[in-house]
Structure formats: C-alpha cells, structure tokens
Length: 85
Image 1 (cartoon, one colour):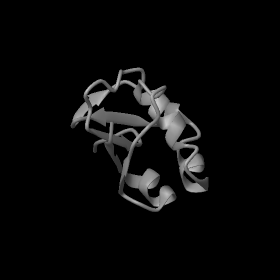
Image 2 (cartoon, one colour):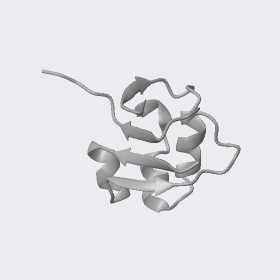
Image 3 (cartoon, rainbow, N blue to C red):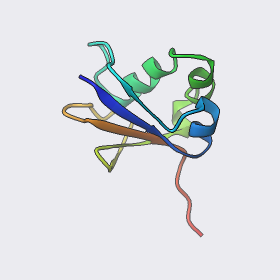
C-alpha cells in the first residue's frame, strides 16, 4: 500500500523534504503506527517525529486523530498544531 506523505512547517524543515512516497510494512495500521515507522527512516525523521503528541495529521485531506486506522488512505499529512490569529 503506497502512501504519499506530506510534511508541513517545522516538521518539513527538520526532515528536509515536503513529501515522500512510502510503502509501510503490514504492521502499520494506524496513523500513530505510521509516524512511529517513519521515525525510523533517518535522523531528521527521528528528531521531528519523536514526540507524536506534538503532531496533527490528516488522511486524504481530512483531519484525523493519531489512533485513526489508515484504511484506504492514499495521502497522509503530518504537521504541527494549527493556530489562527
């Protein structure tokens, strides 16, 4: 199951890329599992994804909690909390 991963704000800056296509292993079934797996992909990923509680996510452009199953998602966005002003 190939997924397009989008990174925003300081997550993108720390990882050093705004997007990537990945093929997670079968045990990755939730957004939280995906984040944990992505954190193993390199030092930038590890640093930016080390504290999942500081992150928000969207699957197929819909905000979701980190315990949401990936299901048929084709795109997952990972970003810091959104603030307005």
